[in-house]
Image (tube, rainbow, N blue to C red; front, side, top):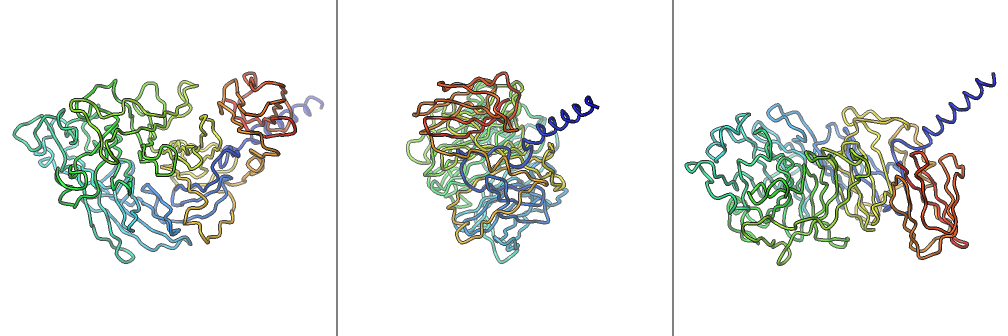
Length: 545
C-alpha cells in the first residue's frame, strides 16, 4: 500500500512538472518585453493578442491565408487569402485580397487570379489607400526561350514571371491597376546571342540572369519571391527571392512604362534593380563562399524612429546551409544619399557582412531553425520580435539576445483545430507575426478589453506572475537567456543575494555576493530568480536548456 501511495505521489509530481510550464500560448512574459499587440493569421482566423496571449480582436474569413496580413491605421484589416486555382500550384499561393473593418465585417474583396495570373505570399497597404500585390504570370516555352532561357533549364516547359501591381480599390469588389512592374522586363543572358536580352551578365548587376538557378533544377517557379515590402520615404519596394537567396530593391516612383525600361523614375534606372544583396553568384561576382542569404524571408527597411532606422532587417532561414540554422540579420546598404546605392563595377554589392546577426548555435542541430516562412521586426524598445514560422513560435529578444517573451501558436494551420494547454502542436506553421505599439492609431477609441486566450484550458498564472517587480534594481540585465549553464546579472546596483525557485515554487539554490549563477546541474525548464540588492527585490524568469 505504501509503495502504491509513493508511486501515485511521484506520478502526480511528474504530471505537475510536465504541465506547470505552458506548451502553447504565452510561454514566457517578462517586464523587458515590449508591451504591444501581436497580429498573426492561422487557418481562417486572424488574431490580435496581448503579451499574455489574450485575444484583443479576431477576424474570420471563409478562406485560408494567402499569406500576409496587416492591421491598418483606421482599424481595418488587410488580408491575402488562398483560393483554388488549378493553373498554379506552389507554396504561398493566394489569389484573393480582403479588407475587414475592426468589427469584422468584410468591406472590400478582390480576386487577382485567373488562368494566367495569381497573387501569392504578400500584399502591402499603400499610404494612399491603394494595395500593392505580388503575383506570378506564366511565360510560355517559346517566350522563355526567346528571352534567352537555356532550353535544357526549362524542365517544366514554362517559366514564372514575378509581377508587382498597385491596385486602386473600386467599390466593394473591384479594383483598377494603376502601376505595374514585371521581372521579365529586366532579364539578361549570355547563353544565346540570337535571343533577346543577350549581354555580359557580370557587367549588368542591375538585371536578372534568366539562366542562374542557384543550384535549382530548372522548375518554372525559379524565383519564388516570398516577400514584398514598401518604404514610403524612399518610394522603393524590397523584394525577396527565396530560390535565388537574394533581396532586390526597385523604384516605385516610375510610371508603368518607365518600370518596364531601364530609364526613368527618381533614380533614373527605370525598373532595373537599384540594389541587390545576398548571393553575388547571381550576377557572376562571387562564389558560394560569398553567399550570405539562404532562403530568406521578410527583408524590409527598419522604420524611422527605431534603432537601426534605414537599415534592412531579414529573417535568414538557412535553408540549404550546412549546418542548418536560422538567423536574423541587419544590413546597412552603402549609399551616397538616401535611396541611392553605391556599387563598384566588377564587385559584389556591399556590405560584406551584416551589422548584426542573431542565431542560436548552442546546440547542433540548432534549436532555432525554420526552413520556410518566418519574420523579424525591430520594436520601439530596441527589442526584436522573431517569428520562427515553421514551429509557430514567436519570441522577443533584448539587446543581450536574451528571450524576454515567447508565444506558441495554438491553432492547427491546416484545419483550424485549437489545441489544449499541454499539447505540442506540429502543424501550427505561421507565415509572419507583427507587433503593434499601444499608441498605434488603429487602437484609438477602441475597446481593447482582453478576451480569453486562443488555446483551450488556458493557464495564465505563469504569465501573470512573470517579470513582477517588487522594487526596481537599476539597469538590470540578465544574459544569456535562455542558457545552458552560466547566467550573468549585470546592474549598477550591488547584487547581495540570488534565490532560485523552480516552477513548483520551491527554493532550490541560493548564492550571495556574486553576479554569476551556475545552472548547469539543473534540469531544462523555467526558473524564477529572486534578485536582492539592499532593500530592493526583482523577480526574473530564466529558461534553462
